[in-house]
Image (cartoon, rainbow, N blue to C red; front, side, top):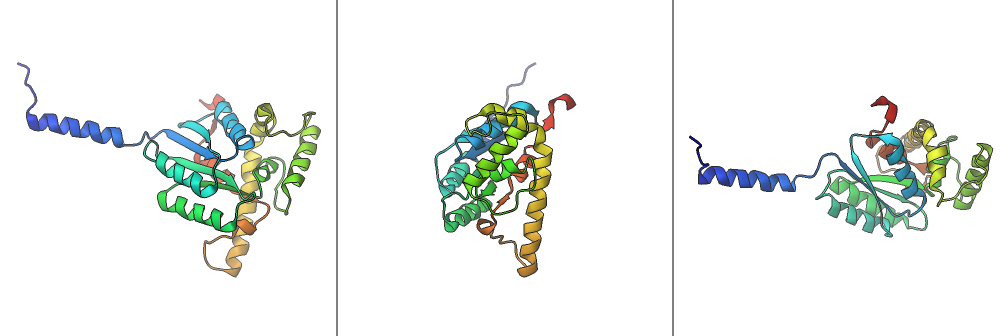
Length: 223
């Protein structure tokens, strides 16, 4: 004979259902960026060209770093993996460091480039560690792409260039960015025994490779 659940058992089921609703979906991965063109196009290219255990979503928000991190904190209620991508650009050091401190407090990942995201793109071809302006970076990328048989050169709006040229060189970019990152860290620690890295003074610098590693990307033919 079928036994109907007691009132206590029904309450336990409802409680479990309520808790389940509040638990973030473990396989969702949100990337928030204030870069509408290069950054968004790049990460969408990675999402389309690689397999991963995560459901990756890339979202553009036209905000300063601190505000971007605040939005990321709000998103934590829906997913437990949230990263913010932003550059030094025209933002003050205070704004950058406050955003990073806030992100650390709430478990938000930060992918930062100085002076712009193009530092990370340059790492696909060679270690980018010498100080450069944004204009210089774009000019050099334009020249490199043409030498790689891409006559249109570099354009932030050209989604195809990220898929066809940059994505295949992802391993090189990760290696080059990590080498420069470790070098900067070692130089800092020789002078100061702390982890308060002056990344706003490190031109050129990027730690976007940390975000790429967190995404756990794998070639599609490995599945």
